[in-house]
Length: 349
Image (cartoon, rainbow, N blue to C red; front, side, top):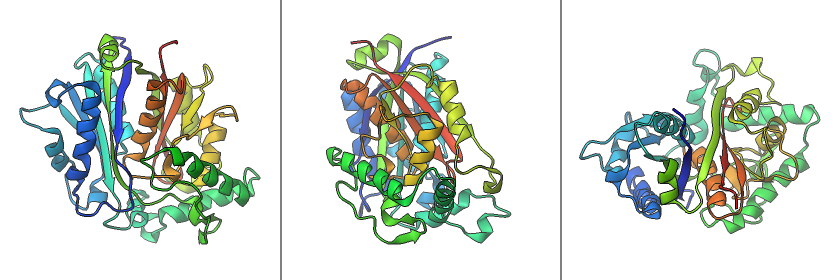
């Protein structure tokens, strides 16, 4: 069964260093209310609900069940969860709508980084026998990738600083961003990465509504049609990968149809400046493509929601007519290990 499926609404929190006094549910509920209000739907009108979050980040098992209080799980709803960034929850919801079992889907994701050390938590993603016992944190691994990129002649430190400056300058127009405008590059965190090359630690949440066929046009004046979406994964062991390239991102983009026609916008989930350089090369993005007009993850990085935000930001540009064909990218794992690419299009104007 072939169905056209679109993102018809997007909402997100104001991403902040710490949202004190609010639980994940309390942080999430206003976003859920806002995204449903944009479509005029009520929770009972949603055919399928899927969420993305991390029990490691929350510090308790099955933490996602608490978030269902914000959705309203009674009467019983059709619901699922992925222990991944919300972009992968969107992929599951997309496949659900393709089956025809539902016409609408609510996808949401959230993460509170402030209670602990994200750098340490993300170490739990590593190979548990060889890498994780050494406790290399996420910044140290990103620094290895950045140094490999510099050694290969694909970038230098001023080029990385320029990525950070452009991203945070673009974020001045994004009221939800945590870092906006001129941000000093600062001291080295782990050479060659300075403070400005690294993402801020953010608390935040995001949600989108998907709809199929004519239902999408009923709910949104200009739906962002998902013309293709795919995700791929690379080897767990960093030593067998070329960290200066991202073949999984390129393969996902190819299968999503990103190379069939040019895109005008790309929202890349690149938490570190060097990762944007890698992704630009892998995804064949030239200077004519507007990259991360929202500021990207360098302006706000709510772990487990940042990838879904990239899809939402790309869709929102199509909704308001600022883009006609956009690429959205999400990543998970160390050094761009897992990559998802979606191609979104608006109806001809």
